[in-house]
Image 1: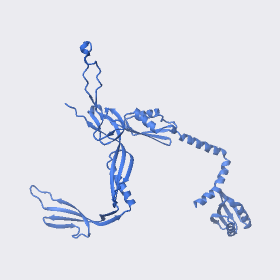
Image 2: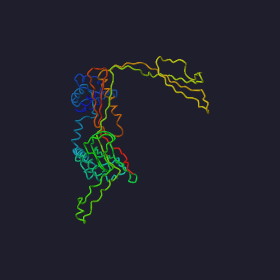
Image 3: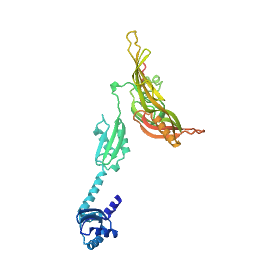
Image 4: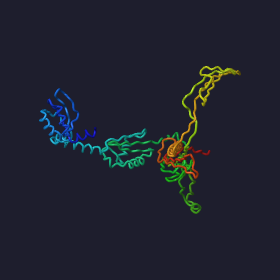
Length: 419
């Protein structure tokens, strides 16, 4: 139906009001000559309303004269009539074309910039640095490189931990995450150590002495940014010169190292491993969903049922029991207990899986096992699964999963100063 209406709109159709005493003969002659009429409605005793294509108007005129029927055009619909009307309004077409060109041109520029995530940093400062990198209102968005803007903001604003630039339509969104640094009066000497093993991808040092660089492999507990800053190398005369020349002062004693509260970010690639296995044939026991409860009070060796029956209506079941004892008084214990028992019916089951179904479920379990070790907000780089193949075929599908993340592995560790 939709295709027919679309073709009719494409070639044009007309709405006709037909009047006459031989309307049945009019319709029969039109049908016999292959003229298709649709949406036929009787609107009066000798009047009908029909729709037909533009190409059928001329043959219908001949049928109307033959059957002594009159018809009037009540409407012209379709693409040919729209084009005909537009040809008489060339200024309208020109205005529509200019409007579309202007709309496309305006949509090629960035007009709005939103800043999200900043709590301490002023929005004006972020906008100023973004403008220096080429992102500002009125710039053509095709000339803006998101990665270049992100790198420039990180370079000019070391207090920013994460930057993301996203352009959508005429709006650019800059999302940042600020670093939280303690005030000096609250700081104590500390180093940043690795809390996980990984491959260093990025090192950003705000305070302290960096001991690792990009590409280094680190292990848990290894110092990444030390809070102990060694003194500069001593500069003075060569030993023995003072004996020859009394005017030359002896070398100064070495300065002690400086202790600071290290601050910075060390992002590394970290891998998590998971394992999952699913049998092709699984036997087990599960709950059916039916259960009953029983409440009784025990006084000594006697049991009084308060709710529920004596017999259990299930052949197989699991019991969950809750016992509440009466509070004692001094050295006396009252032998009264209130016991609540919940009986849940169980049944045995057997599930048979194809190897493809078992492999899919094992991959899912292995990935969930690997993801369980991921804590906090981290960036997942890649996830891989692989079936563990054994020499002897088994009825169990075994899968190992590996999840690669990019995360901050730094952990503050206080420095113990010797007294």
